[in-house]
Image (cartoon, rainbow, N blue to C red):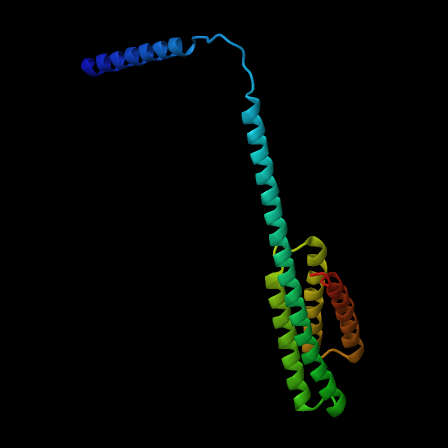
Length: 180
């Protein structure tokens, strides 16, 4: 055991010696005055600025692409939703609410509204411009609200209120997507 203690002591002394030599070698001062290489600084600054502009431009382009995709999804969803819902309204006006075809059209409209809301939601990523994303989320929510109201076969006044909310948010969403 004494042999291990001596070996450990020898290793500690050796490590301490190496450390002192290293500290001594690294503490040597160099004479002179520190100065910035203006040419290197200008080149570095230019590169950083160019990289920053490129990154900003890339983010803006990505945001525009995702915003355009969300607006395209809105237009597609709205056309399909309105068409399906209007088919339900036409049949219910022609045949009355108790007709089996009216219930079938209502079920199709509910499914279409929910599918379209889900498809739009998939396009509403964090990259979509905030001024567009808000109205599109409201449209998605009111599309689901209209689907829920129709699925419950709510009274006409309740359904009409849901239609009015849907139409208001639809108009707002279409307006913000006008330029995309």
